[in-house]
Each structure stands twice: as structure tokens, then as C-alpha cells.
Length: 379
Image 1 (cartoon, rainbow, N blue to C red):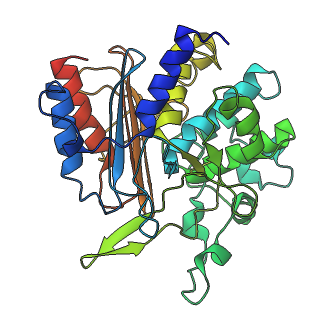
Image 2: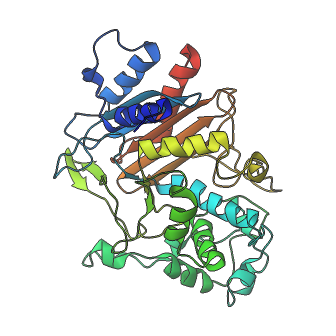
């Protein structure tokens, strides 16, 4: 059988991403200045026998750097590599937004469709809330985390978890939102949980299955999944940890870890490189389809703020504010035991992705530090 050069290059890239790249593993002089600086960042995270992180840098569609440090599982001591799958937390939101945009493109959903039309029986306060409000965090929906009863320490976490249907019921039990839809901006996990349920209602498929059929399979993201315990599995899974009093505690799940649209996707550095390529080449949605997602929301009251509390811009599932004059689309994720970030500098052709299975890492800050090396010293 004849093997094409393209196939060889894909295999080479896969091998590169599948192997752990420890800071001490490359001979001196083998990397230029940005690579060495990125290696140094990883080396400071911790030892090779602790929970750790992976960093991927993509420049003009090619892997410029892949580095990992630590293990994905303290029991099996599996070294983190390019195929280790981490819980993405809120980095999930860009996939949820894409699912909604695909349905809009298909003509099955409109951004101005109202919540009470999509969920008959939803209280009157949802009548003015639209799909667009949910996407850009201007719905005014209460946070479901604030509505949940206090966790009982005697009950195992997995048994106390709330799912998407449970979130819908909590919201149905409220008489009013925080503010009139469109009046203010307030980050809303509740809104993205409902968006996942809307995808199910409109498509006739479960949310994990819609993502699989319409996004993950077409892009060959073979180890990316919206995880539902007992229904599917995560291969090469990283588990989350928190360091307390000098010791690592297993903190992989919380009472909110079973919801999907706001943070339930697991993925790897390798699969996210395919996701980045799809965004760069508009493989799923055209540039025209993406325009609403790339348009910063404007409200009469307080607007979007980033994780640092400073003013920011937000579209559909993406923050959109520039960094040091470099236009970007980005997001971060934080959940018990995991920290994640993706920074796409659209005018520079540079993407930096950080995935970590330990709670003491600021993934967004780390991604920007590494991005600064490449933006300053070249790609």
C-alpha cells in the first residue's frame, strides 16, 4: 500500500504528541529560547511523580512546542502525555456554543428563540430570556450552585451530584432572575447547562451524542467526550488532585461535576490541536457562521469581566479581549482538581493550551506567560 507524505506527517505529529516531553529530557541546544523558557515553566510546576500539567503551543497550524510534567493518576503513576484527557471545566463552553451554532446554521434553532418556548412550563421570568442571552451570559439566570442544598459529608460525592435536568428543576423553582435579560453581564453556568439541554431538545440526541456526531467524530477527536458516569468512559483519563498540608488529596469530583453544557467535556492536548485546526480552517462553521460568536456583547449596565476582575469582552463561549495589543479568543476553566486554558492569538497565528490536574496552577496566567515568549521571540 502506498503511503502519502501527508499520512506520514500526521503519524509524526501523533508520535510527537503522544510522548511526554519533560524539561530535562532534551539535550542542551536542541530548543530555541521560547522552548527553553517554556521548559523552565513546566519544571517549576512540580516533580515528575506529582499531578502536573501539559502545555501545547501551535504556531501557524503546526506544533511548535509540546511539554508535559507529572502524572495523570497517583495510583497508576501514568505520566501525562499528549493524549492524556483532562476535565476541561469551562473550556467546555466553546463546544456547547458551537453545538448551538450548528443547529442555528441547520435552521433548527434561532438565537432569538425564547426560554419559555423551548421549555414549556418554565416560569414567567424566563419569557424574555433568549438563546442569545444564554450564550453571552446576559440572561440574569440565578447560579444553580447557589440554589443547591448544602452537601452532606456522609453521602458519597457521586451520589449527591446534580445533573442537567436537576439544574432545570432548580431554575423552574425560582420566581425571578437576578436582572432583566440583556441589562447586565454576569457569568452563568446555569445558562450553559440550559444550552446543553436545548441542544438535546432540538436535535433529538443526547448532548454527549450530539457533540460526538457533529463535532468530535468529524474532527477525529477520538479521546474527547462529554462524560456521563456509567454511560461512556474517558480513555487515558487524568484525575484531579489538591495539595493540602503538604499532601495530595484526591479531588476529582464535586457535587457539580455531573453537569454537561457548562463544563463536562474531557479532552487532550492532541485532540485540542485538532479543535484548533478546525477553528483556523473553519471546518465546522464558516467565518460568516462564526461572526455572532466573535462579536463582543454590549449591555447598558456592567459589562463582562475576566477572571482577574478587570473589564473584558465576551461573545459565544469565548472571551474576546486583546492581550498586550494582540487580538485573541480565549477561555479558562476551573473545577475541583483541574485548571485549564486556551489562548488563541488570531492575528498572530499562535495558540497556547494548558491542561492541569492539580488545583494550585493558574492555567490562564501560565498560558499567557508562555504565549509571551513566542510572541516576543518568534514562532
